[in-house]
Length: 387
Image (cartoon, rainbow, N blue to C red):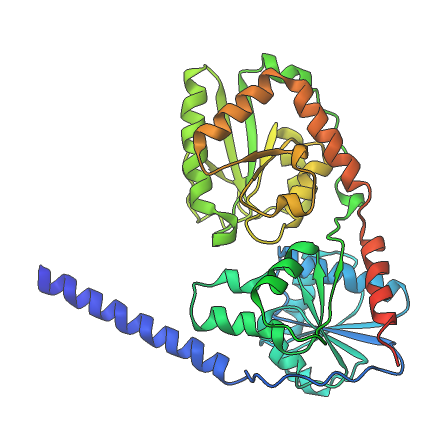
């Protein structure tokens, strides 16, 4: 039996090594670490976003489409080109899932080298190396601090290095900028600007809720955004909620946990995985739920904004980035200690005026945000770079 197990381990190790080598060989085929010499354009009429495919149900891709659509509305010729193989029909279908009425033209990897644009924008660390080879003023839309997507090692360091290659960076929110300035070797000519991290108000409107009724309820539904990536803490969230659910059971209170955001085949404990939801399904879930929960351990996602916009009381993590974007007193900020969350939820349920105050604080902050305003900030930045 020991020989059999050892044989299986050897096979697994060989497969893993082969997979890792293929991955690194692919990266090595396009990376280079020469800094760019950015030449300011005489005019800015066309803008191209270089993306890692067009993925459906992707918050990052949706944000790119929203920014591109707003820029198109302002008269810019906007394009999105994938540096990874993907059929154009699939790109169109996925783009429409993310944003039904998006504007701009889609291009495949085969068309990457024929695109000419006044500004070319990287949207991920891999795309930086393709943008470097394209014509046009080179920019980098930083939606997250991507080294944290990887264990410390070669890929971590390569991702980190992309912030040091001379592209003009625009950070979605202040946290990315803070991380880059803290961890990277930037020269005095490095450009890193910020725009607000917004959300789409038209899609997530306020839902009337009776928060005062919470103190008399014996059943609560919690909508939990879960993704099988470390920055969303998919396993620690389940551990925490399972314990909180069991503790509430002792109080004769039922906590019904509804996970969403990941494939249905992703098994979740102590609750039901609803899978990936479209916008109408999301609104129905937010309407049904009494609390929402999300882990923003790296740059915040659209999910907390969406929940708060509907008036859903939010649970976030104090070790995450929430406080960079919204007031700390606009949600329950919990630790990884499940007892902390249980006590906070119980106190909030018994004192619903606190919930009302949090929701009001959040809503007041959200009122200042919009894609129109963030796009104006973006345009203000690019107008300063013209010759």
